Length: 74
Image (cartoon, rainbow, N blue to C red; front, side, top):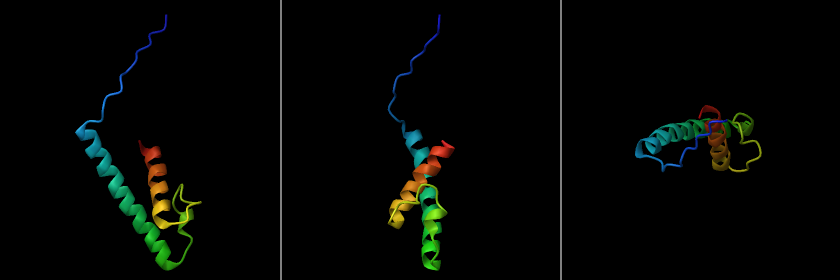
């Protein structure tokens, strides 16, 4: 017989939210700095960031890149 254990969905603890914020915020700032540098230099920065290829604004591109990057590390 298969042993199937079910885990209940627990609400996020304060430590989990803090850890997520300590990862997401620096990643967003770093990728925003890269995109801004690319925008100032005049290069096609969307190809540098994963997930930002089809976005028209810099913040939408960085937002997409952060979530793509986060899916790879978590």
